[in-house]
Image (cartoon, rainbow, N blue to C red; front, side, top):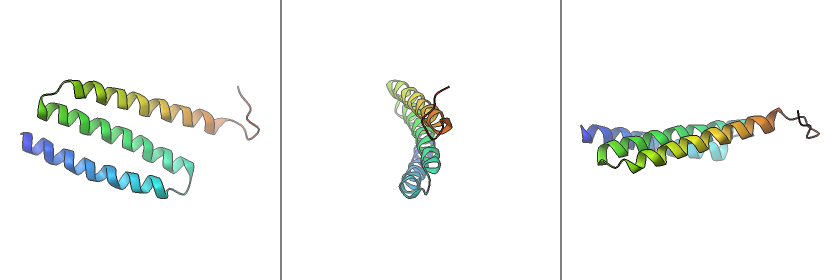
Length: 90
């Protein structure tokens, strides 16, 4: 079972590398933000899998903090993207 979990974590790590490359090459800021959200989600999953495989419950806490930071970053980007070109606020 641990071998399967580690193989899945390795596959997700390869996915993370592809997302990093796509984020660096993204033509628009929205594409880069989508890749950042993908990185946050994938990183959370990898940490949760490693916490299960290595019996380290502290990694689950780190994964939850990473998920929270990714969500806050997405909200901040959306809020900034919805502002007018003159920098208007609601």
